[in-house]
Amino acid sequence: MKKVLIINTHLTYPNWTEGKLNDAFAEKARDFFKSKGFEVIETKVENGYNIEEEEKKHLDAEIVILQTPINWFGAPWIYKKYVDEVFNRGLFTKSFLSGDGRTREDLTKQYGTGGNMHGKKFMISATWNAPKEAFGNPEYKLFEGKDLSDIFLPITSNYRFCGYDIIDSYNCFDIFKNAEIEKDLENYPSHLSKVFEL
Image 1 (cartoon, one colour):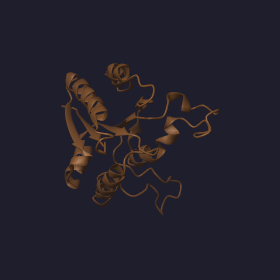
Image 2: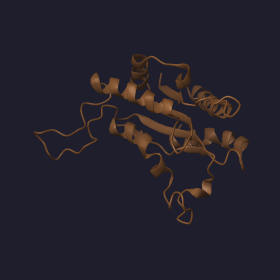
Image 3: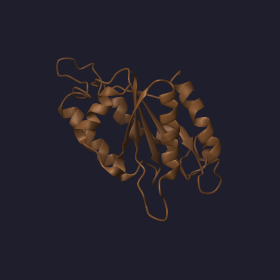
């Protein structure tokens, strides 16, 4: 049976962000993949995790989905800690990658080509305060025309470095001022079906 790993990296701030929206997107993904015959493996980073078990989850899953709020233009700090611990484990055991790809014997090999996770896929599903029109729009001063793939580069590069294919993200924008949350939740399974060809 094919497996998908859903990593929920919401970080609770009492009386402000309780995690219900990210839980709802994780649940939508869980239900979708179960309906397609996948075994769903989950990690809620805030609840704690075992580093060796997380390494195995990545090795077992064909698809990894990061469900995250965007806090200060990135995933919450607990996700960076998670990546440092789990990916360092995958480096030391040589399960995720065998070095950075370069060798002294063959100087034509590129940095970032040493991954062992080829054929696996990684996708981000994110919730934002930012409006959709802030991305890919040179008239918006903050991002200066940069799109979501540019903003997500610090996250996706970890997975690409290990050999994953990066799949188009899914985003719920402007959640505090002009949200279309119900519509975004409703459309999420269609996105998953399209990008994973299921």
